[in-house]
Image (cartoon, rainbow, N blue to C red; front, side):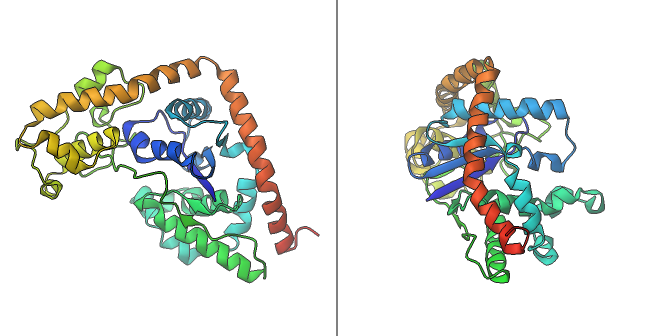
Length: 331
């Protein structure tokens, strides 16, 4: 089993990234061979500040390592440091079909009303995403609900390429359900919206770098309702902010939402929020300290990423060479 996944280096990690993906990645390291990359080529699909992008790659690498990604167990690298990604993406662009990409809902969401003004890269980035996975012969890809469509596209591209050129080169990847459950963390200001870096309100998210006081303050001000906590999780379905905070507590303590509610049934958020703040601080404080240490040694971070890129390039080279041969560009 080989697992591949990436994350865009668009700024510091927040609690939603940590509970929704990164801690799951950490657990995966003991279940499969893992390659994790910083998707800096994908970051180019919107306007970027070059200096900020370079800094963000290091910052994200430090945050991942601080969170538990172990370069001795997993291959950690920057996507742009392995040219096989964009090279294979061009070949696969010639295999993918416009109709397939037109059905990708994320392009419609991200381009909004300015579809004609969106970059071509934003439209075709699911093909680069397919190359990210297929170039390593990945068997499984950990994805959230919003990315399942892209895994289906990668499977379609793999099968069409194999059929078009009468080869068995690409493995159609499967969604990976290992690594335990991933929490879907919503905004602290709106229980119907995901916690996001793009939200204009700093109060909507908790950063890994937030101080203990900032964490406690953000949780204290998190939007809730006046009702006490119920015993049955199903009774939270119409209470999105309450459901979100209970889910965050469950993800951090390793409990089920039902177990969390058992401890707090009948209590209001005046009692629940301090306990949630304490649990959040206990999880994030050692990560924050480690992140600060890692930031201070840029050369060490660069060395880790360079070693990861060298290993990833060696893994990708045979597949890329076979793809070139299949389409007639190599002997």
